[in-house]
View 1 (cartoon, rainbow, N blue to C red):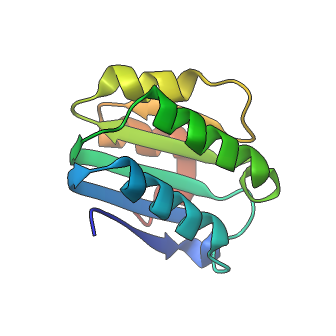
View 2: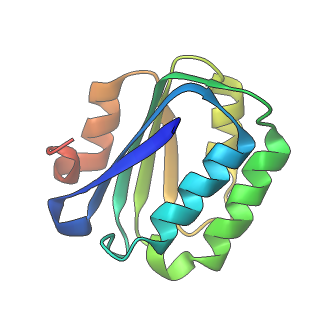
View 3: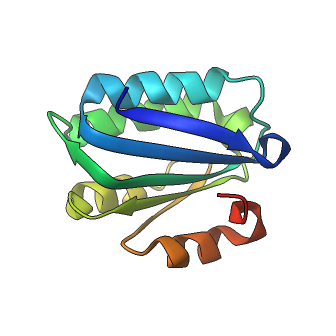
Length: 126
């Protein structure tokens, strides 16, 4: 599976790792799994490490689908943060970051340490 995640810090932190080729279906399945996971508490923080991933068939339409799903789960996302770390596909990731009509903060980074600092102490167990 190209996108996996671990739930940490009693459900307040999610560490997600994407590797290899990642498709739209992979992203949508990961998103559905995280949002349905009862171990994850509302307002959770997430570190999404995509530094070893390459998006295949992922477009702005994919990001819009993900944003719509996020809106439907606002109660779980409200007050949370998601730091996305990328090495490639920066422009597309920045487009996802720019969507303002969302229940949580999303920021794109190139540097893992800077992303962890932005997330704060909840990311210490990553």
